[in-house]
Image (tube, rainbow, N blue to C red; front, side, top):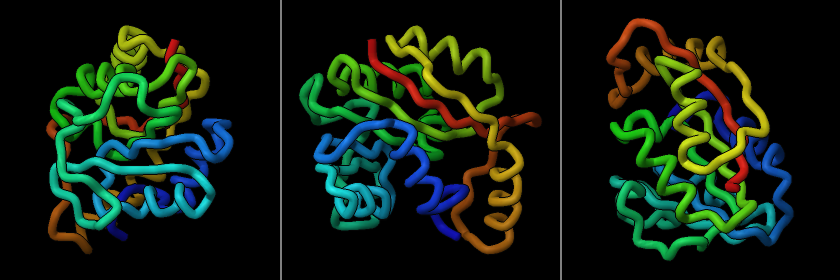
Length: 171
């Protein structure tokens, strides 16, 4: 139950939607226990993760809002349920854009109070949105289960949320 809605199946889906072939280099922003980093490696990719509170050996302790990587270091960036809790979605998107090579892919899924605002923030960070899905129903099921089974659940601050999946290309 830990992690994010859809678990490893959802991570695979995000990776597939990127259309990046191995051995592309990936960064998982908000990597947690490193399960997605390990999945990427098992699929033949180079991968690393960053998280404020890493819970796995495949994850570097650090803040992706102030990342320790050189600009243009990655072909792909993946983030699941992380940008919103960073407290600064525009900066998270800007840093993702800085870390990606031109033409690199950002794939993420997260909650938002305003899909149009998130779409505009993504564009302002230098991305073209190539795919967008509303996965709110799956998130609600996950979230309700998490409230009953987990001690560490991020509580949303507003009343109306949408859970969206974005596939973006750095321009």
